[in-house]
Image 1 (cartoon, rainbow, N blue to C red):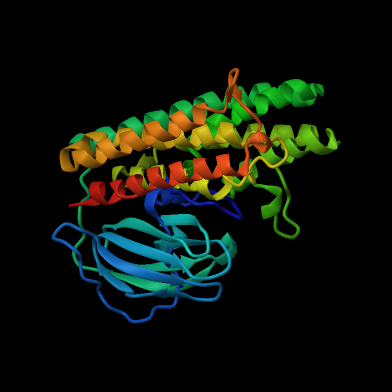
Image 2: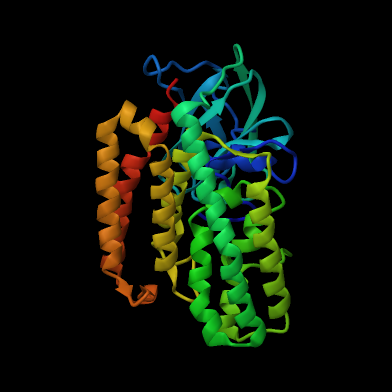
Length: 400
């Protein structure tokens, strides 16, 4: 997954106010802003089936963002994004006020990703590709026509949304005391205790990171920005800034201030997910599951996430757990519509989890710098196989 100025929200939430919840929810699972991409030709793509979302191809490069169509009907829209550039890119769909309706990030050069966005109201939207995952992106207009449609929010859909929101809340509730323990050790100068608590505290965050990515005000970068993603003049805060001090430089004069800021930021996240205007869109939950797997593929497998501590496998496990919980939330719907896919997803999760257990050590894992390249490739292949199955879940849930 990883953050630059603002990671985005493959998770499943949709909030409707301008600051605390607004961008958060909608972006969550599927959103990606198509705003501002250059379109090849305005057209309404044909649907591949009676209930299948219309597909729009997006050809992304370092300088262009070309859509096969810039108009579609209300309801679920599917964007198939191919990165033909040299930089990792993101894709967004924005509503009024730059509200993120859907987004997908960490699309590496040569890769294809699918984003399904529920655009239930007719009107003007925007799309955007973000080469390098920074800035406003290459934006373009996108028009949605037809009558407003109502997404099913009752029955199994309401149950799925409620269950997932409870899970998100449980994780942010647990994140606060875990960060408190970590920060207390930092402020005491107890480096060994802080190192031991670092991967534990991050677990709760990594299980639901796409939710944090959906919030405005750069909340996710404040908590989890990596040094490699810093922009010129940008202040570095959060877990990774303290990670470097603990493992590389020694605690610096600003360590206590960084620790206090981390506490404040995770409390802001907790308050945000508990706000009445923070809601979960059940059709986007599977997008959040996919986003967490992409997080593993884009930054965990390479070892670039926890580059100083090498505690990547803790994050790896947390992302897997978060993804599996997201899929479980929509499982009643999936089993009703495509039970065979559910069984395949279960099998792939079991295989990936079993492989990860090979690297267990005590209550945690071996350090990632001891995992060989062939072993990393084995992990990568397992996640790719899992991702292939999970990528189909969102389309099944979005069917009308």
